[in-house]
Length: 168
Image (cartoon, rainbow, N blue to C red; front, side, top):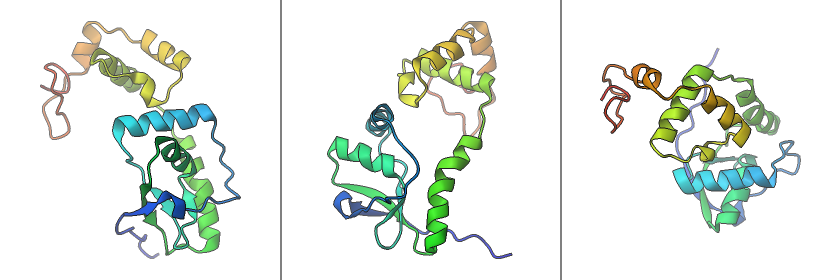
């Protein structure tokens, strides 16, 4: 079996050069596009659009719609020139479907959401709807349990500026 191909680098492309794939099966509501707009505003454009050598979008149609709303003129892209036409079509589906097969460790998720909320981060930017957030946060006691469970030994991943969280 051969080794997987590693993509070498990102490039920037003008959004008017990008071509949407007319057979894209994934749909995006206006509310979801607004969530992506808010995410890009908060975190930056951190997930490049995947394109072929012909500038045809393989993955990233919703991100393109969001940057249009933001008035951006260019975006980071990764050119996947090694894919056949059949592979491009398959990746357009797989890129959207495979993440849906994942689950959540709800105990850890509740702890993370509660910690972010205590740090006054707008947890609505994360993508959960109000009912989901209410359910997850209602099940989390923000008292001693949070302070106790969020402590860990200092390590290279635990760099919270707040004492008592993530090993400070």
